[in-house]
Length: 180
Ligand code: HEC
Image (cartoon, rainbow, N blue to C red):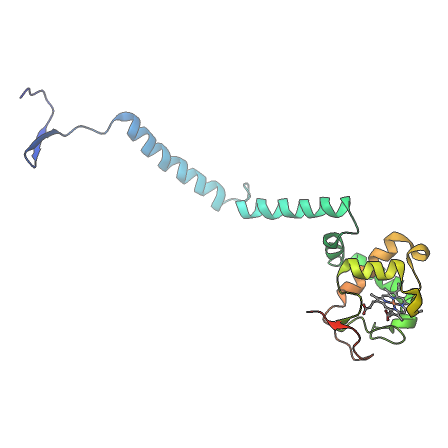
């Protein structure tokens, strides 16, 4: 058995050397510790670097905005619009001037159905409401408002009607089917 200055030890009758950890291995080990600490400092103690969930949220918001701009009459765009207090306020003005006469001052229903309850004849989605506004139901007593008020006002008043969901104001009796 040749012996240099390395220590030998016996385990299960096998003679093995007890070498130092290789330098590259130690560099990786301590390098990772230093990097990990720096990473923790940067991501958890400062606001300089956004966390992955924040990056994700920002991406989703940007995508929604982009889709809403690309197709302002999509369900997604109308839902987004219905979250904008500005659009709702604009829509409420349109409603007061154009719709209140038939649907009641607070949309509780009059000649036209109650728009605050969960019963809908033609559907409760944003696209269904926009279609109702734009095309009306001429044979049922609601004129088409699209050509009169234009696209922007039609979308804003749709946002306003969407914002009434869940209000359930007492008014005209339920018409149509319940939509949860
Ligand atoms: C001249 C009266 C009149 C006016 C003005 C009017 N509506 Fe209507 N609306 C009706 C009637 C009547 C119905 C029911 C149609 C049916 O029975 O199919 C209706 C139905 C609707 C529906 C579908 C309700 C459901 O249960 O599916 C929506 C949404 C609606 N109107 C929104 C509006 C909005 C918003 C405006 C204003 C831009 C407006 N309406 C103006 C008379 C009117």
